[in-house]
Image (cartoon, rainbow, N blue to C red; front, side):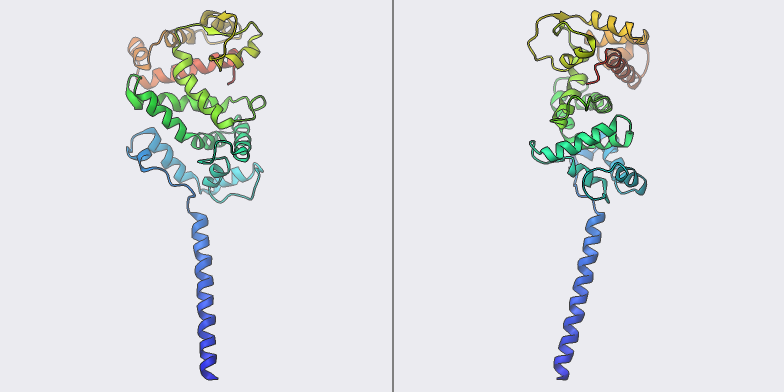
Length: 282
């Protein structure tokens, strides 16, 4: 009897230890990131991609950011790590993940007025943006570094101005496509834009989709004229014309005697204001 009692005590203690170990493992798992970023994305400490990932790792479990995100009343339980938000928004899931797409749409809607939401969306679409930068880096001046420097600011502007009320579906693909278009196509097109005659407020839908076969053409001069009527800063016109003629940030910087980073900022601001003034928030 005493032996049986001793065995029973040992079994109970063993079960208690296993229960405590399981609870501890669950806590550790909850506090750990859900995503593992590719080492190749952060191999160069000075690259903007590396800085983005490091910034994300620092902010993703901070109480301040978590409190803000949980205050948005997004679907699902409260999050304990921002990686959970990326997963819910369809990070690395199937392209037809409608639930993730709807969650991302809510984030993009929030991003029009909230920088943290925009930052989360940028992190969500970072892998396809980098894929574009690698592809474009083979053909643009400055290689992949220049392509990354172009695509990231473009994506930020697209996220902050995304017309969520008109484009509620395929949000991730829309964001990525628009980012590539405004970074590498829209500002460097030497040919004329093809659109049908309509009010500039509606015109933006077709400026964002140049592949459509349309009837009447509108020149950059006409688009700028509309922007001037809407109050665009005249100082941006010369930059827009330089960009439209194919000048790179390096060429603009050399012409005005400024740093290349400054030239990129001018270009991004000029293109952004042109979109705003022509009401083409795409």
